[in-house]
Image (cartoon, rainbow, N blue to C red; front, side):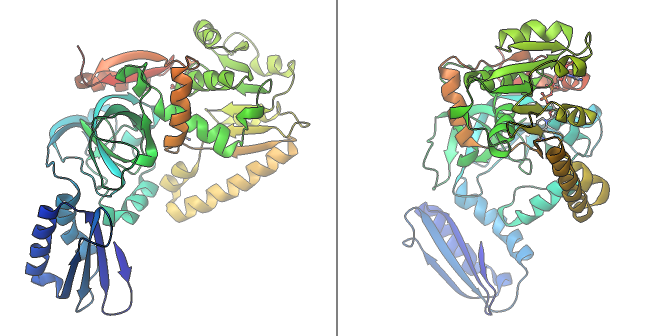
Length: 440
Ligand SMILES: NC(=O)C1=CN([C@@H]2O[C@H](COP(=O)(O)OP(=O)(O)OC[C@H]3O[C@@H](n4cnc5c(N)ncnc54)[C@H](OP(=O)(O)O)[C@@H]3O)[C@@H](O)[C@H]2O)C=CC1
C-alpha cells in the first residue's frame, strides 16, 4: 500500500487480478461508507498481472483502520483458498507445555504478489524454535511484525514455530516468476513470518529454491536453515571467496551439530582444509563428512591442541561465549583472517533492554568486538540467519553433485512434535531433527 501524504490522501492497492475477484472488490469498496471515499478508481490495465485501486479519501483515516478494512479484501484478492490448517503453536511464551496442536489454525494466505503458498511435507527443528517458544527475540520481532502490518504478516500469538521446510508450491502470487504450482521447493523463512511447523506456509520467492532432485522431503528439510545461516556467516559476513578458498584453513567449532555438519561439507566442497571440534562419539561422523583434523574437546585440552596447529584463515564459531575470545587467538595475523560468531546478541539485548537500548548496546559490543579482532590481527564479526534462495540454488547443485549430504539425526512424525522438540532441548545433536508431515 502506498500513501500520498498530501490531502486528500490517496491509497493505492495493488493485487493479483482475476477479473471476477476484481469486480467484487470494486463493488465492495464502493459500498463502504466508513472509508469516506470520494473516488474509487479501479483499473486492471496499468500492470500486466495486477489490478490497481486508487482510493481518494475525503478525510484523514488512520493507516491502521484502513489496514483492518484491507485485510479481508486483500485475502480475497491474492488467495482463493480459504483453508484451516493444522499447526503447532504457542499461545504464551514458556516451555514445551505451551506447545499445542491446533487443527483449526488460521490458514496461511498469500499477501503479496511475490509470495507463494507451500504445502509443507517436512520441516526441521532448530535451537531457535526452542528459544522463540520461550520468548526469544519477541521485542524486535514484534517491531518487525508491526512494520509489516499493512502486509498482515500475523500477530505475535498464536505463534507458529519452524523456520525451514521442504514442500510443494500450491499457489503463487502474480509476480512469482521462478516457480509454478506443483514445483517441489525447499527454503528457510524470515523470523517475523508465521512458521513452518504447520501444514501450509507462505514465503517469498527470494527465500526459496527448487528442492534437490536426489533428496526426499525429510532429507531436504534438514538443510535450508543451517545452509542459509552458514552462508550468511562465511559468504555474506566473512566475504569468503569460494573460488579462491582451495587450501585455505578453516576451524569449525562444534562440528557435530546442525550448523557444524553442514559447514564442514560446504568448506570441503570449496576445497578448504577443515579442522573441527566435537566430543568423542561424534569424531567418526565429522571425519566421514570430510574434516581433515578433529579435536575431541572432551578428552583433550582443546585450546592448547589448537595452539600447536598452523593458524586459520577462517574460524566459524556457532556457540559464542568465551569460546569466541579463545578462538580469536587462533586467527592468522598474516592472512587477513576472519572469525565469525553466530552468537548474535541483538535479539537477546532487545529482549532484556527494549529495542532501542538493545540496538545501542549491540552496536557498542560490535565496536568492542571489532577492536578485539583488530588486536588479534584479524577481524571478528557476528552473523545471523538470513533467508537466501540464491544460496540454496548453489547448495542444491552441490547436493545434486553429491558434495553435500543431509545429516538427519532423528525423524519424528508431525503429530509427535513434542518428542521432537524435546530431542532438540536435550542437546548433543548429531545433525538435524526433522518433522515428517506424511510418515508412512
Ligand atoms: N545467530 C543465528 O542466526 C544462528 C545461531 N545459531 C547458533 O549456533 C549454535 C549451533 O546451532 P546448531 O548447530 O543448529 O545446534 P545443535 O544443537 O544442532 O548443535 C550443537 C552441537 O554443539 C556440540 N557442542 C556443545 N558444546 C560444545 C563444545 N564446547 N565444543 C564443541 N562442540 C560442542 C553439541 O554436541 P555435544 O554437546 O555432545 O558436544 C552439538 O552437536 C546454536 O547455539 C545456535 O544458537 C544457529 C543458527 C542461527
